[in-house]
Length: 453
Ligand code: BGC
Image (cartoon, rainbow, N blue to C red; front, side):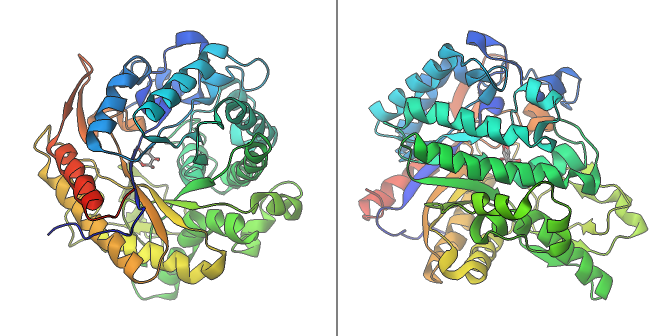
């Protein structure tokens, strides 16, 4: 299999996030995040030292050199909110802003487009302690912070991402308690979804007011496959699809919730908020990892695993294992065509309302230190499926692989490796894997064929 040629101007990039790489130690005046507190409570499974991360805060120049060696057009990193506004509101930490200023300059000096995400899950701890995303005020604080970052960087940053994966934050952080802040509210978690969406809309407004342009959001999408033939299976899968895909995409792209029942559970002046949430976007980002097979709840579903943990049995749907596909080391099925399926589904659902798309994340956890042939096969398969979606008329403008380097995989710690570059967590030494050389060659040949630049 080889990688087909992509359209002219297609953007080739890699993604990463602050908590997973920078090191969460209170360097340079950074304040603690909800994730730092969660880690300190022993919630990282392998006890990885999240205060060091991959050492990105100190070694960012090395990583920019690695990006340049790849020939990457763009780097999607995240700005740590508690590094810039340690208290969540109030005084700005100048050293925090200076760090991103240096990082942006370093990227620009290498001809790499900086594409910062303003929220990749590291809520300032004081805001988390005041209810986090359950508290409407957090959305307003986010917009203030977004404006502060844009005031400083908009002159050099040509691409902005507001929020990363509000669905995961809602589900894992507030409904199931597997991620920070560790709340187990099940359906009472829905206000956290609404307030993140509101933060996105207010953030878009604040970014534009501060001179930023080319703004999008990164939303996770999974094609939901129905397990079984019964009406209960269909209902379970439909509800899951609503909760993970459309509850986030619909408000942003159409200004409506997909379901009146869901809308009724949302707090505040929902109709007014939806007008803010659906502020026009320049592009829409899709994070794709795998499809999900869902049916009616069954007693045995207490054993179903989702991202490696057990789902509560009282949920009105059950997630089943997808069989017949190779699995990543996370246990996620490798289904490249699911990427095509998701993209075509988005185009069909939204038509002209869908702005150009970027794949803002796609990658896999494989435990092959340097000779990572499984990652190469994964990426090759997904790029093929992406090209097919483009052939079917979906307007996709670029691809960011997850991730440049191995990094702290949230509660999984250092044990799940998603990088093109291997990190030795004792020495923080970086070693490019085979997939790094492969991706470099892909980018090179695309440019030689005229796809990029
Ligand atoms: C997140 C990343 C994470 C990746 C793999 C996405 O949900 O945005 O931070 O590392 O998936 O789990």
